Length: 243
Ligand code: SAM
Image 1: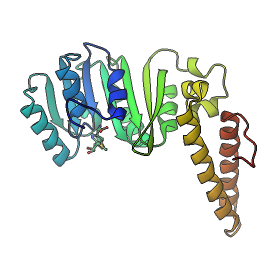
Image 2 (image 1 turned 90 degrees about the vertical axis):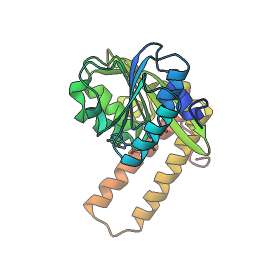
Image 3 (image 1 turned 135 degrees about the vertical axis):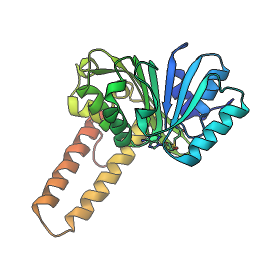
């Protein structure tokens, strides 16, 4: 991967960045994403934000060596603190856990009024982001799931709108867990991801059955059973012999 050729994961994020936006890529690391978009002429301004010195230096070096310093402004700082109010109208946050992404959005809420689109790629726990979006008047408008190098990634695209709209005809908890659009498509990668998650939960459940009984263990077991049931529904009520 470099500034000319993105990984499939980052290319999927890039696909949802509208032409001509003012972008902030938070946790940009090497700044491949904003550099790629700037080189393709699809953006004329971007902030590449990084909280850690090493990746910040790497982003600064790449931007400099590509001659993109007029377009991509590399800034050191935590989350959305690197952008000024009104400076950008599109934000990408990729390659982190869902809880961290939701926390960055929560802490930077005052920077969001002028932002029209969020493109978020959590490595785990996309449900935490879906919940945050729902509670903060962001409507999920598209989702993708992809596998690369043996890992499965989800990409979530949100705009301000009707947060409940994508969940209208489905069970809310299930939609938040697996993604309303992904649930609708139920492609092979989706099925693979949730079969693996289900097996993992079953393993944990068996371990808990061997643990000393306590109210906490019982609660955890019930939560796991609920999630297993939800995912079985999502996968189309596969029978337990197959699952
Ligand atoms: N976005 C790139 C990608 O998807 O390939 C890089 C992902 S890298 C695994 C995550 C980056 O996020 C790291 O460079 C880390 O330093 C940065 N990061 C983590 N928390 C951050 C925060 N609160 N604000 C800004 N950057 C953060």
